[in-house]
Amino acid sequence: MKWSIYNYKYNSRKHGILLFNMLSGAFIEIGDEDTEIEFEKIRNNPDNYDFSRKEKLLDFLISNGILCENDEENKNITEFYSLYARFDSKQRSVTILPTLNCNLACTYCYEASNLKNEKMSPIVVEGLKKYMKKEYSSLENGLKVHWYGGEPLLAHDVMISISNFLDENNICFDASIVTNGLLLNKSKISSFSSLKINEIQITLDGLKNTHDKRRMFKNGSATFDAIMENMKLLHGFVNVNRDIHVDIRINIDRENEDEYHIIYEYLKNEFPLFHPYAGILRQYTSCGSSIPCFVDQTEVADFHIRQYEKYGLIEPVFYPYLKGMSYCMAESPYSDMIGPKGEMYLCLKDTGDKNETIGDIFNGKTNVRLMASYCTGKLTFNSDRCRECKVVSLCGGGCANIKYRNSKYGEKNDPCVPFKENVYLEKYLDLHYEIKKKNAKD
Ligand code: SF4
Ligand code: SF4
Image (tube, rainbow, N blue to C red):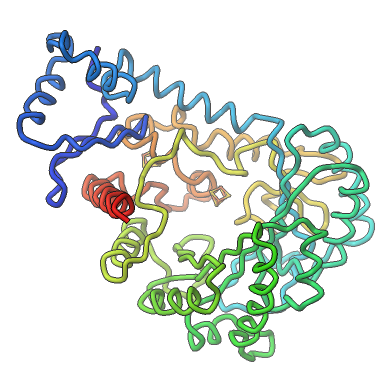
């Protein structure tokens, strides 16, 4: 029996001695000095520790992964489950970009330009329906459809046509949409029921002044007030359709970070059923040169910590535990992303860039090289750095797109999570502990 290498024990200035296991997620308050001495004895030599009258403690330590036989084996099991999930053909999702056209001209828009005005033609829509019938007809767990763009509501007719087709062919599905909110009138909103949309994301760029400087119509005119009006309509709809979840993504960077808490409070008051959150703009492909994006993850962590400490805003990021190493749609062959010409991608960051397509709906996924790069590029056993990293089970190896771009284009984007540094791991755990205690009291 040994003390797991994934244990992290530290002396929190606010909460005393705490112990966290990065593989199981167990988080334990050690408490008084005597208990600490006993834990040190266990840590130094678990096999010699006398558990004869502390069998419950022994069971507890083993079941929470604090003591284990073989750390490497446990890590492999976690990684195995992650691989297993990403190759699970029962979990199918499709992200559809019915158009890359947009009614806005945001100053920082990152979507590559060679397909920018493209909308799905009737031939592509027919091809997509055939593809869907072949791929999704016998799904046990249904299909998740994500509508994305451009502005997907500019191709509302395509959304209706595809959704009707799925219904007519008994393909069980539900859907989400990412929209800039400007086309949300009464009739589009009420169509969400037949489109089976139960998750909606609307994006803002901060308070009115900031937003209107960055997220404007193509003729330069302001959009904030119009979006607010449309959000009122949507809020009324959600009030009678409570199973619909609406996120308001507020794009945040170094320039507008100080107004985040103000717009957050404003939105919470105006639209209590919606969920505003900070969408951090990081300085790699998602950020045009006109925006002072956050450069590294520690800046992002500092932002979240400040928001909590100064304004009590809790982002769901303080518990650095992943319940098994995560993966994203770019790494799963069972997640499809389909552009307006029927071309297929792996990652949203690649949309519109024909060099990064993996095939199309007519001929299938043929670019095995690219799929392999995304799917294996971040596997921890493919990277010395990740293999040796103590927080590997919390991070899962980072974003596949960052790793792909670093390796293919020689970019130098940092894939690491902030809590790779002990100082951030402790800050996050402290905050998680504090919030949990507070919630238990309330
Ligand atoms: S590869 Fe990275 S950016 Fe692309 S979908 Fe996955 S997590 Fe997101
Ligand atoms: S923190 Fe960095 S080194 Fe560690 S697993 Fe994540 S990407 Fe790999």
